[in-house]
Length: 406
Ligand code: FEO
Image (tube, rainbow, N blue to C red; front, side, top):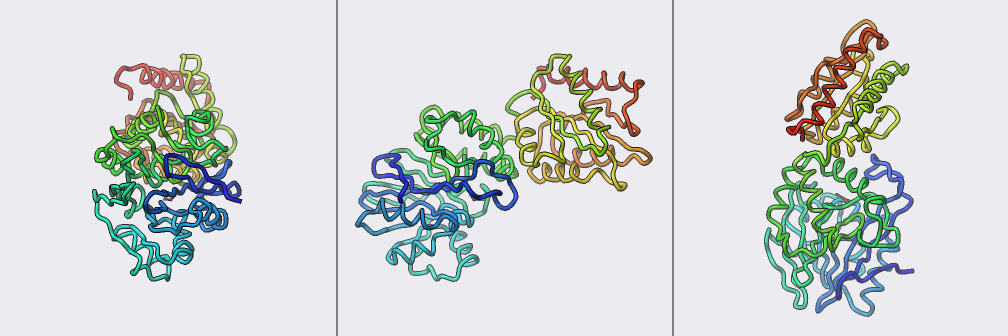
């Protein structure tokens, strides 16, 4: 049974929803699955833009065959060579043996690393900025190296102004019948998952994302067609571009506090909770509290990308910083998190290691403003430390209210 949809004259979505996959890249939870988008142009020439994961091959091949009807496939464009999109290149070439495969030098290098098939008789290598004229449709290619792989390229279909953007502007989550963000409740269904996808998958490569945003002909783009999640048109084009520009600069979207804590016996938890209640009393409305042992880090990271302030609470464990907190901070380092205001509550019973560990890991990030005082409690927060906690809460609230705050 084919499931396809026309998105513009002679241009069709031929992707597949995967509602069964539990973890993206075997790492990130997918409570709503994931969509693998693929597009087929049926003008003077037939052009398929990317394939999908091998696990959903049957549906995909049926979709492509249905839209082609009695035509064959002339071209396959490979904008991204990661297996969730290149898993059916071999199947497509076998099904349409005269197809020409369009990629760049790195695309074909990666193809030969993953697959045994010899593509040399099919390959057309494009360069950055090159225009390919297919008669009724023209595609201009824009290399987007390290967004988030080296071979990634985007292409713009110039007649309709459609940006085929590989993984960029994508999201976790399957398409709920509606295909475009303006046809569904984007803020409820996809905004958080788009942020979680960006921050965890592409977050490290902010400068590369920023560079490619500079070179794209953004004023001509009327639709963004990513490889995951909903397509964007109308007001969502500028909204999604603006969000990605903010994220690529590691600028917070809004003022607010993420309180991420690790706690063995709820003592550090209690200290963080007490701080949160003081912040609430001081009028801080935007707060998100996470136990790093209970919430997958991808969700915490997404909110840390969203908000301006971060409170970290953790005990010493085995003469080290509590490991799930250390793992979270190392991940944030790898993702290049910058430009945040950070407060610290450490805990220890006989050897104070957590405070040093938190400071070292956060201190290695760029443009971090540490908020004082830092608390280093002994086993439990005592009444005589409440004054210190009050000072910390006031300092966080003042920083949030400061016109200089991000
Ligand atoms: Fe959706 Fe980078 O693969």
